[in-house]
Length: 266
Image (cartoon, one colour):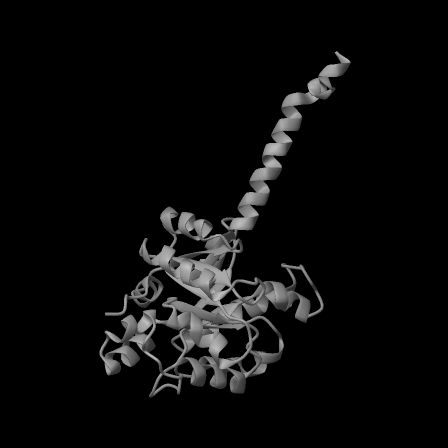
């Protein structure tokens, strides 16, 4: 049988799911995050050049520790959308959804009948290499693999309600970074329109029976939960590693102090 999604299991029972983003290509980073106890690991194909063998390794690392893997896909051919699912990633996130017609095409591509017309193989990891019953494979994939539509531009806001009403996807995910650029205020996280939209995405998702996701930090996690977000990515490996290295260099400098001069000068 296809393994269940921990994220969907938690969200469907009213719980909150944690997520952590991995930018580094080394699967050891994914495994460390999975061992740490996150519900979901987010890896990226939109901005990071990873080949499919690396994604397969990420899948194995998360499966070994009962952790979901969400792959943000690149916007390309239909095979770019379905390959992570066939490798047995637990979910995909599609960036820059620009309107209701765009969302319909995505759902048509990534869901099996009756929700869509995703191309069928069944001979890969998600179908247990043909060991799963054919109809059970289609039905379980539609139920246990989550599809996330990323709202990170102002263009789809006029059709946000229509998008949220569509069947065949699970979550609206607000991306503040690109959204801030899209409204001409890059990096202004306190911009009134950005704050208003972040709240609206959560409200519209909840109103239409969808889950709401976004990025955040420990500092604003409670605020996001209060808004109605129950799937929050709260950190990234590169942030942690960069901050750790900077702290070590700072500590080294402070410890040396006046003793930092060359021993050859003594």
